[in-house]
Structure formats: C-alpha cells, structure tokens
Image 1 (cartoon, rainbow, N blue to C red):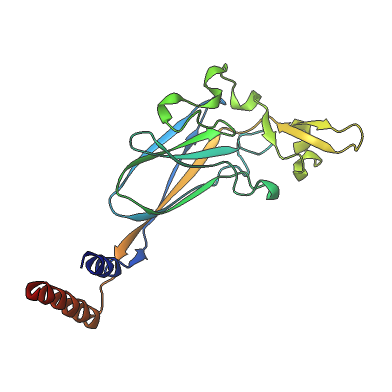
Image 2 (cartoon, rainbow, N blue to C red; image 1 turned 45 degrees about the horizontal axis):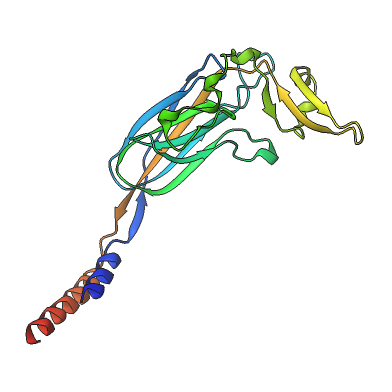
Length: 220
C-alpha cells in the first residue's frame, strides 16, 4: 500500500517552469585576491543560472579586457555547491556560467573571484587559493591565458601578453596577460518551478485507487 500511495504522490508533483526576471550585479575589484560575495534567497524550488558577461571589452583597461572571472555557488552555511571558471576555454570564452536544476528553497550566495582563485576546500570559511599571497592590483597582475588565444599574436593586445615558447616547435605553450580591467558583472536568473494542476480525470482515477486500497485494508 505504501508503494502505491508513493507512486501517486510522485505523479502529482510533475514540474514546469515559470519565468522570472534576470537580476544583474556588478562592480569593480581592486586586487587579484579580492572576493565578491552576493547573497540571495530562493523562496521556491527553482532552476538557477548564474553567468558573467564582463570579460569582454573594458572601458578602463589599456588592452580593453577585464579580468577573467571565476564563479562559485554556496549554500547559506557556506557549503560548496558548484563552480565554473570558463564557459568555453578552447573557444576563448573566459566568462563563467553555472546552472542548477530544482534548487531547494533557502539562503544561498555566489562568489566572483579572479581566475584561478578557487576555494581551498568545500567550505567557504576556509578561504581561497590566493589568500596567502600579497595583494596585486588587477592592472599590474599577470593572469593566465589560453596560449592558443588569437590575442597572443594580435596587435595591439599582444604587447600585454607574456608567452613561453617551446624551443623545438616554436609554438606558444603558456601565456599570461596584464593591464586588465577591474570590472565584474554577474547575472542571476531564477526560474520558479511550479506544480502542474492535474486534469480532473487523473484526480478521479487517483481517488478511485486510494478508495479501493482503503476498502481492501478494511476488509482484511
């Protein structure tokens, strides 16, 4: 009997999304080991997407690029949920994106750091990789870059790129870039997941089964 009732319960909880607005958060960091924290509340079971859109052209950086961001999602107690460095490193898309389906109601926050300033452990309180180093202003810092990125060989951006060349193949095996902008921008998209009202015929069928099971139990 318990298995039957459980099956009916699961069937009655079919889910479908309802749209919500995207909220943008943005600002500037100063140092390469700064940590931006954005707290938010999820009131209902929701599909969550967080994505940055700041790595592209900058109005302040000499080479027109902001720093490469790193996203991490945490629950309200500072427990790690997910992280992302690059949307597509091989395609030189250095912005970050996270998607979580059916996120439970509760308190959450996400952090934006400069790549690869990832968390030391799965608990926020235990800090990030760059915490022990001396702060370096973003404009003076050399951040890792995909060695195949076209800007490694393109002017004028390549004047801010430091490359390591393989002496045998003469190919670039590693690269860093400096004079980066300090701006970050992150977008929070929460789509509430709501229960679908079931057709009356299904409710009638479920009620009939429940009535039959109760009647059978009484007869036994």
